[in-house]
Figure 1 (cartoon, rainbow, N blue to C red):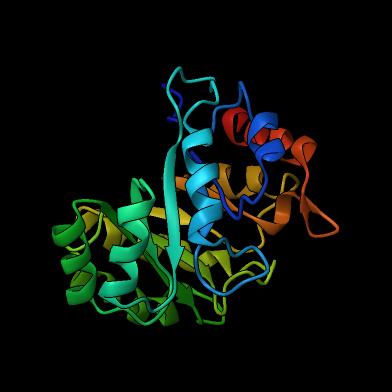
Figure 2 (figure 1 turned 30 degrees about the vertical axis):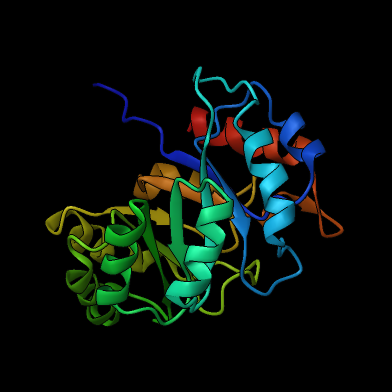
Length: 227
């Protein structure tokens, strides 16, 4: 039996060059930078230094990671100001952005667009299907749906048994499905072996006392790749 391809890895909330240096040689596909209000928020000036630096880090796959800017309910003007100054590969929308807005972002700025959706269902596929139906509107507007715990950045998981209904919807609409919310090096292998998502996105789960911990990042990446 052929082993399934390992999910892609996104490490989010990067603020320091030292964190990027510590990721050298790891199989990281995406690096996320916060432009929304958060303790991990960067100014355009800070991002303007970190993002080019991230492209110089040698990764295990032989190519630099793609850069993801995370925004919450931005205006087109705010996005333009950022994207003119900062070379982002992906814009991740993490607020109440509509499918129409998401599509316009991609068309206007020629970037890949991801849409984060909060999972509010308590448990079980029946209650999840209504949420999964939301994905239909994003067909052709975004490339990737990111499921996260409601509120985002909570460090808590949502009920993973809703994932299959979202996966079915994502596949039917040609979308990739990434999972975030409460992931860490100790639970990501369970996520992958049970659900086989397209990607795993982590931030607080690789921190110690609110600071990115390179040993935890390495452990997380290794768990994803070996699951």
